[in-house]
Amino acid sequence: MKALVAPSYGPLDQLVVTDAPAPSPGPGELLVRVEAAGLNPLDAALVTGAMHAMMPVEHPFVVGMDAAGVVEAVGEGATGYEIGDAVVAYTHFHPGTIAEYTKVGVGPHVAKRPAGLDAVRGAALPSVSLTSECILEAARAEAGQTILIIGATGGVGSFTVQLAAQAGLWVLATAAPADADYVRGLGARDVIDYTSTDPVKEAQRLAGGRLDVVLDLVNRGPALLGTADAMKDGGRLLSTLMGPESFERGITVVYVRMSAREGQLQSLSERVTAGTLSVEVAATYPLDDAPKALAEFASGRYSRGKVVVTV
Ligand SMILES: NC(=O)c1ccc[n+]([C@@H]2O[C@H](COP(=O)([O-])OP(=O)(O)OC[C@H]3O[C@@H](n4cnc5c(N)ncnc54)[C@H](OP(=O)(O)O)[C@@H]3O)[C@@H](O)[C@H]2O)c1
Image (cartoon, rainbow, N blue to C red; front, side, top):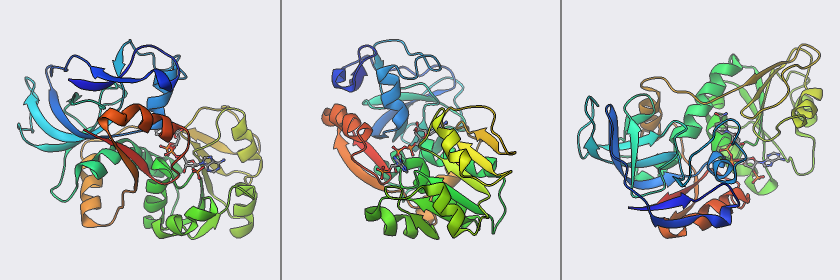
């Protein structure tokens, strides 16, 4: 089958679209004919080796973790799915979706794709929307409380703004000026231009010192201390990246790692078709241009939503 293959750890320009062995579904697994595959920052990190210590991969490997497609074969004991079912899936930290075929274990990381959800938006949905649900749980915030989202226009941010606003939170979101109306349309009450202001200080000012939660999707490692510095005493700091474990002034930090419960991805897919959750796709690229797609995505060319490879 044709696939986007990483031959070894190294720069993104070593990626090739080439022949790779098609996966065969083991017990409890589905073979999916991929129609579209969504890109994530983790895809690039696995190729370069930046995640080597936490998530080593064997080479060569097929890149990608989000997909939408059609069930082509059903492994032994994989119940609930039939050949021909349209699905969305996340391969749960085992790359292999930017290809003509991928395999996924039946469970919370795969769901039947509702008729109104096209493959491109379906492929953009799984990992970021599930991560956003984990973030909302970790926030433990109540309606009326405030949340600042740093990195609000990207994949995770664009879903988290929507979920937080729908939960009744006052959302303050960072965005470059060109994306201010976009993020307001997702539900942000205040938009902070991160290119000209310190987002946390500005959010504190706008919220009258009542900033309850900060979600930082951008800063990692010691840089998170800068975010914490500007937070109020006793605030809650959430991050999807790594950083220090202890903070001063009673600030609680939670490092969120994506996980999924049974039915969650199905429900998120249905919210898209019901019109209560929107999926922004900034660009699509055909499979032959997948190396370019990942390079341009990783370079920060697109600020809004997701980039998807069509197969
Ligand atoms: N722990 C987990 O399980 C998990 C799960 C999913 C994602 N993640 C991680 O979470 C992070 C976000 O993921 P994503 O999919 O949302 O990435 P993404 O789609 O690339 O979005 C990143 C966003 O950050 C914005 N941004 C960049 N620099 C900024 C700055 N200095 N201040 C404010 N905003 C800035 C970008 O907007 P501009 O273009 O305007 O700069 C873009 O909107 C990534 O590092 C990813 O690896 C972790």
